[in-house]
Length: 344
Image (cartoon, one colour):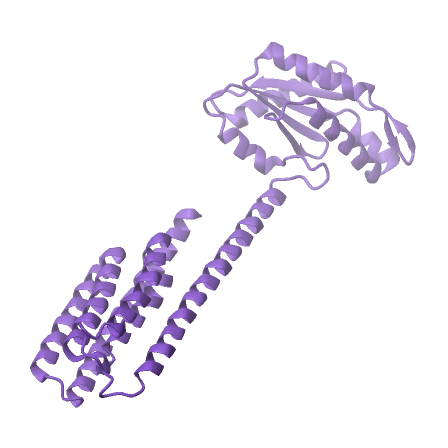
């Protein structure tokens, strides 16, 4: 799932950056026409525009090869340098300094940068714009040509501030959404791996559990409630459920925290004892058998006493199905020998 998400995000960034580069190249051509109409040196503008479009083409090709991070840097650096160069040559009045705004949104929100790099970009770009605006000793002052420069600076900074706030809100919402998404997935995993009646693990989780035991010996025991059909036929399925839950509680209270307790199906339970030899396992399982035998179950039909029979085997070379067959055979032999026994 993680790999699929990474691939999806990579393709999304690749597509987004490709579209941004095409749009940026088109904007360069429009700006070229705009500056020609302002009377800016035609030769310099044409050369600058051609170089800019060639840079975008190179970044586009880089993107198509999968190097979105490199293409992202090319895209942002080109816009920043173009903004500084045009402002330095022709002054603030041609509004080239605002081109930096084009790089903020994609750089901060969408392109293939790390979270730390995005924060640096958001902090750097507003400083860069204001640097071009407030240093007339370097950049020709526009005051004698445009009386609304102050308002432009004010509203531009408000826009930048709004972008920063928007990014922060977006980051918070995205994190909350991701946290919620992870919680939903974990809840779903818990539900899908848990038996609803006993709250023990189910058969699905057991298969996952044994997949993780390749390097460790494990003792398995298949347990069956003796004469359970008679309980259902005599008292009904609701009483049968009470009995199953009572046995599940005994198993839960008498096993180690790293042991597997699984409702395998119906009145059958599967116990897995990792890193456990026969002698130790027999002691644990016999303790459980005795606890069930001594337990009195309170039901609406009165007190009921049940017993269990178990068949034991060692998980052989992680061959779960083979081992379970042996457990079933031992369980059958235990039933034949009189029940209420852990048969090894």
